[in-house]
Image (cartoon, rainbow, N blue to C red; front, side, top):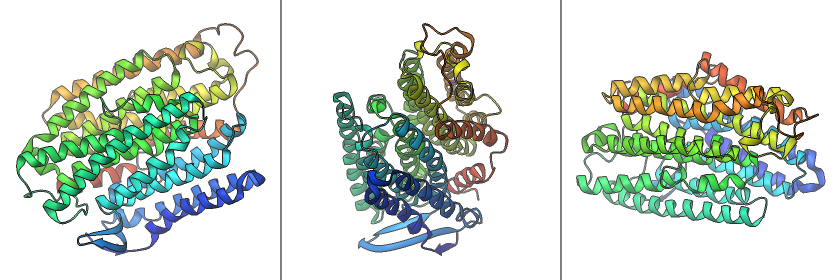
Length: 497
């Protein structure tokens, strides 16, 4: 694999940091300019990231090393196929989220908007640093930047409930980070390096018992941010945050960063061969399956719309980890593609929930009867995304779940096929009534009467993300080659190039 030295990764990282500084300097005095920095940075970052796709598809790896910190470990950025996949998704969805956030925050006349947009930009700086990290040490630095920068967003409303939710968020994620530090120390002592390697680099280092403990520590550490049960409770609690923050948590950065890190450990630290030899893939797949089914059942019981969406996210994150744990080509491809498919569909669902709140201040599923007649674009987009989450064609979720099902058969693990099918039925069970009631039931009272759609700043991103959920289901390589990159990651990790 040819290595190309370039400053593009560093440039893409710097865009968000510079935008955050400009937002802070502009402040409330010139709000249009402040939001202009947000949207301009999103566009520039996306085009820098996309410009690296041809080289990576051609089999190249783009590197940028800044300084060696200690023997075998440097502050290094490395753009491989997996990192580029996550960076492309995050930068793509940041554009939509930036536009939506402007409409949401202005529609509610929210306080502290400068702080909000500053932290929002810095969170994407952290997410892109995680994507482009060339080793565990660099990844951990940006992992913590992401955690710290999103705490003020979770606690943005500054109510007692918001502050409590923010503290729980920090407590969970910092506890997970402590386990990651331990795991990094053990890994370095065994191998003398923390650099990612496709197929892993721990093979032949340490006893089987030690490696099993190390794997458990990594999964518990990164799995906290990925909201694996029983480490998930911070995520539903964090739904007290403004809806654009919920979208950031679920679709763009935080939990997706947790899943990304778990997959980094599976494919680039331990590797499929070592995990198979230690029988750890099946163990993790079993734990992920429990999360899939339990979170789907808990989603059924939630009347608060954002909490129902939160448990749906926990369900789908576990599906991604389940796919990677099966260690078969189709399962890994499907799991990675589902990171993007779920991102577009889940951000549509949260955007719709936010638009409903801005227009009606309603938050409960039981209060949404008939709202589809008042907000048809919003609720039609919600329906598209919800059906896609369940794996209904032609939405992108069908492609990812099809490959996940194929992967379970390739791995000879038919029990996990039934887990995936059961998850799809649960998706229909907790989303179906929302769709049906919003379009085919009469509203209770007069809370919907005379209403129309939210502002175009909100409606356009909602409709666009729903349309992209369909587009990537029909043309999974449209624009940014999501499917090709996911396939490349699977082939590289399994050594089948």
